[in-house]
Image 1 (spheres, one colour):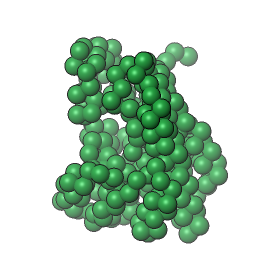
Image 2: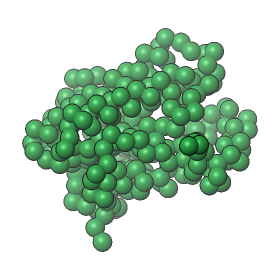
Image 3: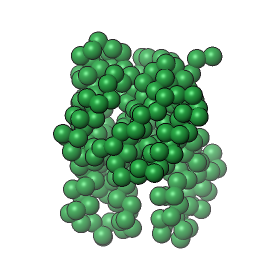
Image 4: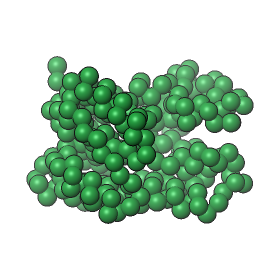
Length: 254
């Protein structure tokens, strides 16, 4: 059977580590012809991801760049060539911040530069090129359930991810019907960045596991298939949407 992204060129940002690395490998397993492995500073991780992509049967291309800089995004869009699927995985979780009281201007500026400005310009540059070449394409922005629950730890992280809603809905209309734009919103994942946080080691992990109907904080590879569903032809009539994937942790009433 054909994979979710069969014979497509897929670019995943932030693919040197964590969820991005798993998304890139899953794209190869789902039939991608080429996977563009983007990274900013995790060169060794990106090389490892590229090797795993090749082992899964796809061509791998490494792409270094800072998505908070517009000229860098333009360069990457030109170098990438024809991209069918863009997965905007890069985001700033303000991981160094353990309490809302620790808010500082540098954290605000960087989080907004990456989560809002950078993601918007990635959608703008890659989406425009998809549209101009007359191709059907899909863009998946990796969001977070934090926009449902808020973040008393890092309000700026919630604000940054909330901004993705406006970006996604706006470009979903602007680029339709050729290019679909959606948000995939995972909950907590068992990545080093999450598991090593002081609040997780002080009992937060146990609380989240207890309050999650599915009973676990999953490893990132368990969510990659759901994320890539939004890039597949099976999701061909889905655009401008927000798909939550958190094991029921943020379950809402009617």
